[in-house]
Length: 305
Image (cartoon, rainbow, N blue to C red):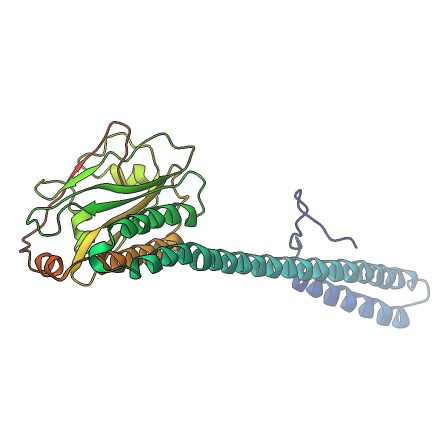
């Protein structure tokens, strides 16, 4: 019996459970046995009838046995196919992880290596390269062709009321929208960004921006993307900014991408810390912080993180 396949050539499970066919085999076997025994005891003139029943039962048993064997083969082929697919998916996930944490993270670490070779006061040029490298590798690493990433950096770490704007941006060629958002701690709307920055809430992952925006005061504003991830860039108690990546199609960024974005954000935070002088470090640590609020000014092109 040939293995049945779906229209796309993939094996499919048997329509009938082999266990059900086994029950039918037991039944026809019992009928054949009863017919054979009855043929011995009935009068000669009646004997053709039980013999015919027994013969029909035997034939049905042969047919059912073939169906059962075919169903078992189909189920084995389907199970092997599913196991093969699972192995391929696991391999693809390992390959992607190897690329993310082998190539993309290594590129950032190479940039940080150049940073470490200079004295803290001479690292301005190198840290700019690290920031850009993080934005680029974040965009490339999530594996979405229309992804766009940006590093929003706090303008003055010692300011009691902070502002953030896009410092380094990496965008796919297919995107013509821009990051136009500015964050102002003196505002009254959207506290999430400052809560993420100050470590009061975890990394933000929004799978469907349209559904997320409906419950927000500025929900009617146009957005050119459908999903995003935003992670804190900081080291210890010093928050330097946020790393964000978005994509046009809702659901195209995965929850699995969150760990990768967080990792690059934390690496960037350590790099930023390496660039602070002792005075800058002390000033940033001792800025009084009250209850933070956030203001998000959204551009008409929807360029928000």
